[in-house]
Length: 134
Image (cartoon, rainbow, N blue to C red; front, side, top):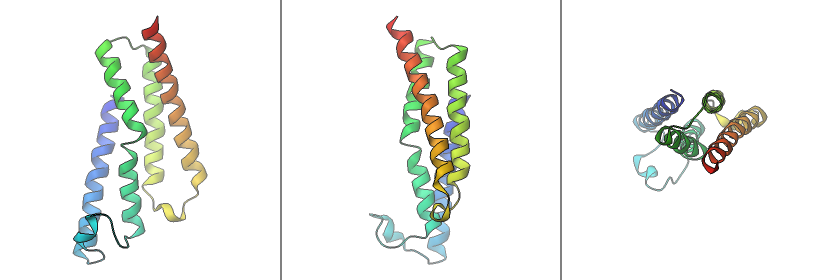
């Protein structure tokens, strides 16, 4: 289930980004050609949406890999599920913080939530490695 929630978040973000880009193009705030190499000025909200989508291909990739490895080896425990849910909960909070325009936001809560999600993921990877060494 935690893996499915992350996938749903990812899909939501790509469709949100596509929708926002389309609306800005239709309103003539930007040109389609700007997307070739992301040149020129982009509205802050669109830039924030793009960064949020890109975020889902950074740290969460390690989560997806860990989930798939745990499923494949079938050695995960209740503790691993708690760690997975902890990661997902903090990523959901991070999602709601990031969905706002990032230009005027206080970065401290976003950073704290990111670090907490990273801590859950790190402990989960340590747990995985320990289980497979012994």
